[in-house]
Every structure is written in structure tokens, then in C-alpha cells.
Amino acid sequence: MESHTSKPVEEAVTETVSDTGNQEQPKASAAELAKSKAKLPKRLGALCLFFAIASISGIVAKQGVLFCVLTLMMVVAILGRQRTAMYMLQGYTVIQLGLVSMLPVILYDPDNLVVGNPSIFRLGELEAKVPDYIIFAILILLSMLQVWIAFTPKVKAYFNSKINMNIMS
Image (cartoon, rainbow, N blue to C red; front, side, top):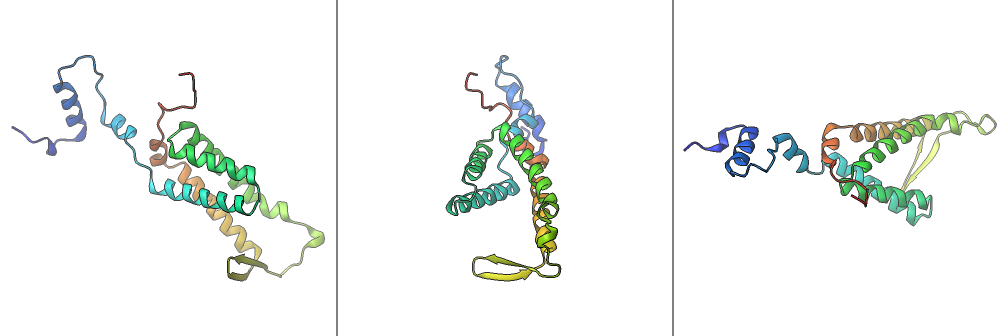
């Protein structure tokens, strides 16, 4: 007898399905099986962790509580592999990139503009004087990273198209 370990995955899957003798079962391709058993990509897990931490800190600080709750609900939907969560994540990141990119224009106030004075950046005990353009650049890079993660093919393969939010089906 020949060992199945040396054969490609597709042949092994079709062979095991055809060996059962049940003609009513449809043959599953390797791509469908891989798609249904896709694990949570590490990048998406890190992004969900970032969203969860940011949302919880926003709730604790009582800043944008409704937005933070909605973001936490999106994280739960992502972990539940909902297809609509993928669309929400992609839309969320694109809108965020657009808003963060327009932040310098939105915050520009000629009456209150003091050229050359850096902003004070506080993160816990860390306090630093950082120029505004560096803060804007970091925010834009983080948003671009989020967009890249949201549109990665591995992330798209993680979401299950059979699961939807229709309670009637």
C-alpha cells in the first residue's frame, strides 16, 4: 500500500471523500477545507487586541463611550468570523486613514498657530516634547498598517461566508 503523506493535499482530500462510498456527499476541495478551518491570523489578532485595549481605555476615560462600545462589538464579530465584520473592519480602517490624513488640515488654526513649539506628548509616566508632524506621521503610519492588515488575503480567508447576521436563515 502507498502512503498518503507524499501525495498533495487535494488528492488526499478527494480520495478520502470518494473512499467513503457515499455518493450523496459532495466532494470538498482543499481550498474549501482550508478556508473553513482557517485560523485567526496573528496580524488580525494583534489588531483586535489593539482595538480592544484602545476601546477599554476610552470607556475607562469616558471619552467616546458609544464609539468604544461599537468598536468592541466589531472585535467580537471579528472573533466570531462574521463576514460583515470584515466589511466593517475594512470600512473602519479606510475612514480612519482618511480622517487621520486630514488631521493636520482639520487642526490648523492660524489664530492659534505657534510655529516651532513642539507638542507635549504624555503616555503614562513618559513625557516628551515632540513636533506635531512626527505625531501626525506616526498616526498615519499606524492607520496605513491597519488598512494593510484589513485587506490581506489571509484575513479575508479567515472570515466564513456561511455565517451571516441573518437570524431568519
